[in-house]
Length: 168
Image (cartoon, rainbow, N blue to C red; front, top):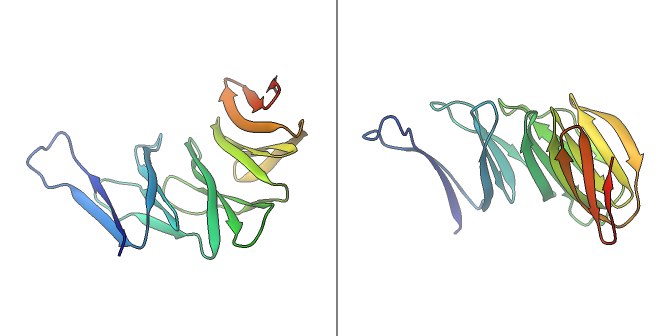
């Protein structure tokens, strides 16, 4: 059976054993440091936040939803989830630096990409760019339907499309 493990090492204490966290049936996709110093781990069925060197990770199970995308930023770990069987829409779940899930931000259009932006996230769908900040939807822009990727550049959002690059 599949088992994923996350080992954390204290580099200033080389003789100390690393902390190990593992789970059966979870495939880890990515591990990243949070700006707060904690660790975010993204798996196919759950996300983990390890807020301190000594504690246990806080687990957020996706519960009958599939992972479409994720991003790590000042706000924490952003997870884009969609119910199995759905072909469009979903919700953005933000886990703050302590692992607490914030209220879900639903969206109806097909998902394209997610990136960290200031203290929130930019969510790109096939026809909209959504700005999420402080755990609420702050704005929506209509965009050309060929957008595929979104990135933050200072105070601007850059959307890469099939035929053009747009700055918002």
